[in-house]
Amino acid sequence: MGSNLEYLPEHRIVLIVGNYGSGKTEVAVNLAIQLSERQNVAIADLDVVNPYFRCREARTEMENFGIRVINPDGGYEAADLPIILPEARGAVLGGDGALILDVGGDDVGARVLSSLADVFSDKSYTMLQVLNARRPFTDTVEGCLKIKSEIEAASRLRVTGLVSNTHLLEETDAQTVLEGLRLARDVGKAAALPVSFMTACEDLRGEFSAEAAGCPILWIRRRMLPPWKLKSMTDRAGRRLGIDD
Image (cartoon, rainbow, N blue to C red; front, side, top):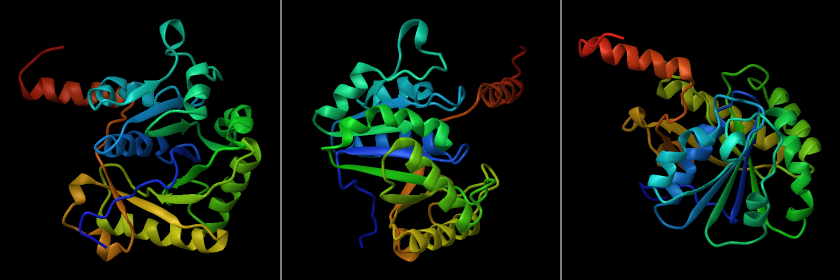
């Protein structure tokens, strides 16, 4: 394995699923940006569950990388509605380059995929379940397998690989990441699924490598922040610069 070991999807279509709060959207956005360095990429926002962490919030940044972002426009852009855009269905049916589908959390969010199951019936796809061992309900093998079964039943599609995305936001260290990888491997063994890749914050480069971990690493730059976090960061920056509200 080379020093720049990275994950490349086996199929054109990649579905990102997982439990609520697992970090699916952060993974989807960062994966889209990485893949855009070598091919055309489109990303479709199918998250109808979480109004704060949806890939549409990073639309401008992704478009700067040449990524096509498919999400409701106009009055529906901020809507929390189960909308399957014709453009998303069309992108699944055909197109060049990679297509990433950012799916809502848990079985509730995955249910939106059931309306596309007929489209996938004759298509090859990769469906990755994102695991964060520091989140409730997915800190054990049994919990992860339960979420997997619920997502598969709701979506009428099969999980084909796992993503280890364990973190504690700003408190994450190398040990946290590697502990999550161990859990993901245990889940993979129980479910007969590969750990397709792991994630780690860019700040941890130098702490470990893909070779040492024995797994491709998607280096994450946090791009998805809730409005209150953005305001907090803006306020702190303003105070440092002597700017009043």
